[in-house]
Image 1 (cartoon, rainbow, N blue to C red):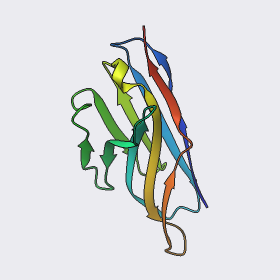
Image 2 (cartoon, one colour):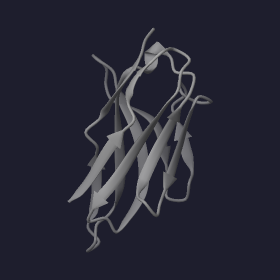
Image 3 (cartoon, rainbow, N blue to C red):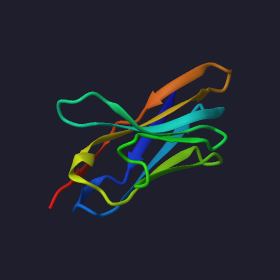
Image 4 (cartoon, rainbow, N blue to C red):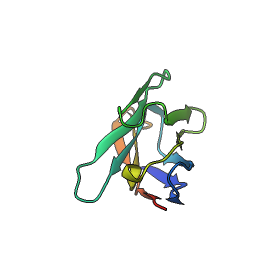
Length: 120
């Protein structure tokens, strides 16, 4: 079993910053890719940022230059620094990780989600 737990969401004014963190635990041998997704009310879940095991990053066009994804491979954690937040960034943010369990079986897990609300 692999668990992902997010933290760091909350209410922030437009132009403000938040930092989301996600920690993986359980039967994890290695993690390949990690990412952050978000889902706003009435919309489909979308990719926000993605990072490979080698550190290569990908961002949604809407967050480029404002958000930064990073990871700590030794701690199985991934973070998302969000600056200059806009009301349209309001959503539930989900952490995702893909890798191998001990015993070499693959996994793809999601966190429970953390609410980010950008409002004055």
